[in-house]
Length: 329
Ligand code: SAM
Image (cartoon, rainbow, N blue to C red):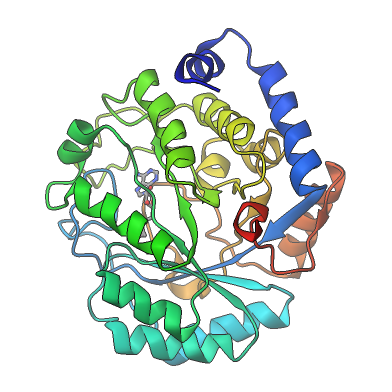
């Protein structure tokens, strides 16, 4: 697909035909299978000032927390006990968790025979190498937008070129690589979203996590409207059509904007769900945006509901590590 064809998917009157095609392609390449990942949001301390994000360093109204190393490993053990095979460790950019601490955590979790995805931001190549050597398997770093001017406006103390470099370093080091964007950012054009989708292919990612921008009253972007659920769904479908064998999560932001958002995304190209297993008492403080779904406990009932939802669309839950087929090639 070229840029015009992607733009057509993003703008045509009804995208139903593309949702159906993306669903068929996902099923053809990845099977009638949904992969589950257990998400642990282990620290909401962040040194960055991303204009859209509720845990940015300038927000004084957020109650900051860090899980102890023991509690992170305990959460991973719990996830393993209830059947998860992949742990996603996500945090703000928190220098408290230096390389030594991160590597210890990674090594302890690897003893549980779990796959580890890290989503902890921009680090040096040596740091990424140390995580890899300790056993981390995957890394998720959204480019957020490939429009360099817009990137600069949204990230006052960050450098677009460095974020790009991080993605290339991660790739070179052999991580199963994920990136992604927010859809509906202020001043983001359709053209720019089409460029973003082509960028995923260019850097040859193994997974793409994208979701709508959700306006947060605690941030500088508080007066801008939310991104559109539908535009994000069209972006998921276009991404799947462009890259048939990658992993694509139905993100929490999709669920936040629409009650059935996760299920619809899973029928339009997505094949991954990331239930949140962050301990209940602190979970609400990882407040990237308002009404973030998954603030409720992941108990037997909600896991059963998830299983039922997945069965209702003709899928079953994967019982393997869920490595991206694109990465396996
Ligand atoms: N610090 C890590 C990083 O920079 O990759 C990971 C944590 S960061 C909070 C995770 C993701 O949350 C970001 O990549 C961004 O896309 C998303 N996010 C933050 N604020 C958001 C908002 N207001 N609406 C939608 N997504 C948001």
